[in-house]
Image (cartoon, rainbow over all chains, first blue to last red; front, side, top):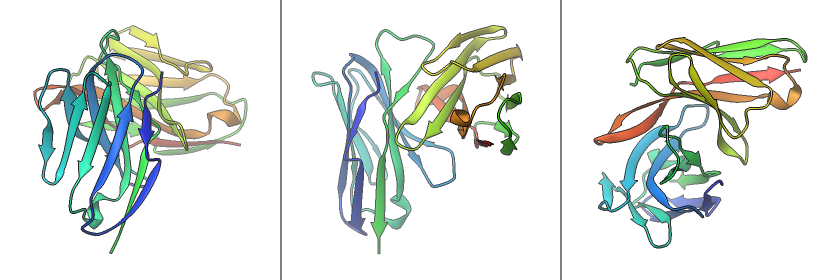
Length: 112
Length: 114
């Protein structure tokens, strides 16, 4: 079953913060975050593992709440380059073949 | 750069014609995947492969078939294309990212079925 992302879209001014959530109905082993620019392929950002630490990458970080099967992506002091659509890919504990199930995406627009 | 190419990058075809999309990787990864991406649906898995001649269905496999005769090539075939198969198709491989496996995507193929 597809994870649910929220919000579906968000518009920010440069320098503002954003949080994108990803919720699954299944017990998860990992959550993978991607960013996709218009007309391009999704690009891997980071992985959150069951029992793992919060990850960070420049001013983008993420957390994984195992009790709620929810991951959140935090973008602080957003830059114009952060614009794009963000996808979470979830790997259920019982899945195999390293398959991911992706959310429907969150469109992030950063304005000057 | 995960060394993944897709061909063709764009294709326009007519309903009822067969279409084959190719995914080529240069890094000897075991797992390969085909997704389609449509507005509002995110990425949905069509088929995947876990080795040469080893393939299995994903969540939206109806109307599609795949083949993998070599490690580096994974082919997706639409036996008789329909307008509902108009989409952007992405190939992915499973490789190492931050010490664990994640998926890396090819550049995509935009397919239009008239």
